[in-house]
Amino acid sequence: MKFLPGRRFVLRSASLFMACSLFVAPAWAAQSARDFVNSLGTQLVTIVNSPISLPEKREKVLPLLQKNVDIDAIARYCLGRYWKVATPEEQKEYLQLFHQTLVGAITDKLGDYRGVSFSIGAVTSSGNEDSVETTLVRPQQPPAKMQWIVSRASGSEKVVDVIGEGASLRMTQRQDYASYIARNGGKVSALISALKRQIANHSAAQQ
Amino acid sequence: MNSGRNGARVCSHAQRSNRQNQTHTQARGRFAIRSAVVVCSFMVLAGCSSIKAPVPTDPDALADYKQANDPYEPLNRKIFTVTMKVDKWVLHPVAKAYVWSVPHPVRNAIGNMITTMNEPSVFFNDVGAGKPRLAGDAFVRWCINMSAGLGGLIDVAKMAGYPHHNNDGGITMANWGIASGPYLFLPMGPSSFRDGIGYGIDQGLSPWNYVPRGYGLVSFNWAYNMMGIVHSRSEHLDDLDALQRDALDPYATIRSAYQQQRKAQAEAIKNDHRATVPLWYHVKNRQQG
Image 1 (cartoon, rainbow over the protein chains, first blue to last red):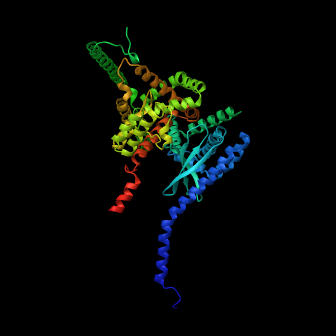
Image 2 (cartoon, each protein chain N blue to C red):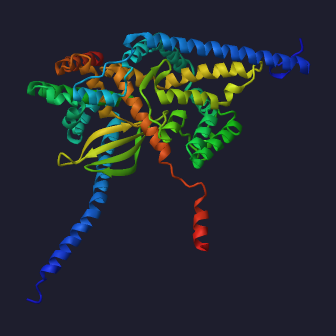
């Protein structure tokens, strides 16, 4: 009996362990967010700098984005209060169009850069989200600072926002959509047809 | 007629003081006319019934309305449309031609010069915000770049570890706790009541607006201002093209981005807590104490 640990000991060690994990958890999360952005950034930069053609680059980047960016969460955030107003069909169609728009906007930028590199700065945590500071260095251009917001809400780490020069991309997009819907009779269908037009123009411009 | 340096005519003291008085009266007259025009145009605009948006009654719409902080949206949108037209037909082509004709290193040097010339106004705002270290940075930047940097053309201060930071009257007032007030779209770009007043204060803080008339510097000042507009437009050619292509409502997108950016700029100044004395001073004091 003597060798068995007492109840008090078990409780104490359990509470000590929990207290430790409370302190350690944010640091661990920050470190993992840093590693996550570092790995995603390295993969993206490798594709951007590689000497392959633009369509090939697009093809390679696509699965990377789908795996590491929480596009559905961003889409819902951008629709804001109109998400509840939209019918299930509209929601489904909107999500699909948003995927196309976002991926199109990102892959559009791929051709612009060559010989880029990036470095990671400070990591700050708030709630379920971590903000990772990065500096993108492009030849012949001033370095661009941006913050990547990484969320663990979906179970694994995913990018939910990018902040450049103090402006959050998802917030700006949300205001854009909200204003457009409000000026078009408060109908989500107006936004859906505008997104369709935009995607059509976009693919016409690419050809 | 005899001419001195900088085109100033050589004349007797009495003549000079007489002419100076005249110039002052003329300048004051011009200023009065200009302010009267501005006040009158505002009154005319205020007379229009469509400058203020109706306050929505739906609670969700009201939340959006409050977040956008743009009660003068109808008026702002009108100014925005006109500004964008002018931009499309004048400023955009000029900026494109500028990028096409002027090589990158020269444009870079012009950009450095414009930034350095604005450093006095940044300095006074740093002092106003109570940030001695930032004020020191701006002061050192001005001294180094105006001398070693050949009148600001080379950013030597950045190489020496004093990079440029943004500060202006609007940000200083934000740090004093003054709210931004309603959003405004002015012909020179997005602004707010507070930032508009800040812009006026900055004009007052810039030494270039105190250059006496009759000196060659006045024409330099004009060239500098025009160059500043074209240069800063040329820096945003791709961004604004992409915005006009991708945004469904460019007006709302610019408004949101501007408001967020101003907030972040004010935060950046506020969060600069670097000590004025060097680190070794603290270490030494601790050892002695």
